[in-house]
Length: 287
Image (cartoon, rainbow, N blue to C red; front, side, top):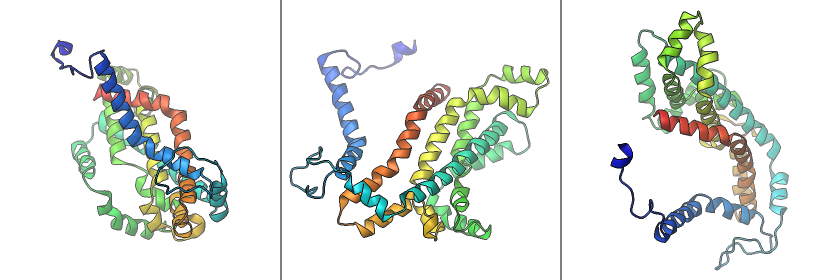
């Protein structure tokens, strides 16, 4: 019945030359908008110093490919140290969200306690607040706790995200109540039900949270810039900003720094893409 009621597009849903052409043109436009800037940055980073990157006829493929810009980046900033600092912050954020969001989401979905609706409402209310509104209060809280100018201070505000808690709540709500009741009758306590019943059903959502949290922590620029003062504690995004001041007239070096920062995100996404798309699919079906 639903299939009969669903309206079909006369162009995109028809297997005709016109429909196929429209599909491929749409895909090419989306690819040009999303992947095009990344390919252009990669091309710029591989162009040699003798090649004009501001030519009137832009060329994607370098005429004389060179990795000199990448060597210049490594000689200018301690790229490995900055990358390690970013990795530590990202690990804190991912670990905190996987543990904290799982526990909070399971409590909101499956445990009965006074004020549960109020807590859920507070989580929903935080979603409408822009991040910039809470920057000052976050900075004062972190510094008064003694975590200023530290990697833990950078990670602390993002270690449990309200959106991640709600995602885990929805994942646990999708578990049939009969299974939960059967586990209770068998004598399973809360942690056992979470370990053996809840977590196996929420693997996809957990992978989505892990990837998105890692990307957000890795790419964050404003908050680490406010918290960190010592040069040896800078994260990769803040450290690479020095390239803009030192090599502002050389787009090759800045493009090389951007590509270096992009590599870990691509590696993580490639490793977990199977779980990521499964998690997105679970959310679409359950939602």
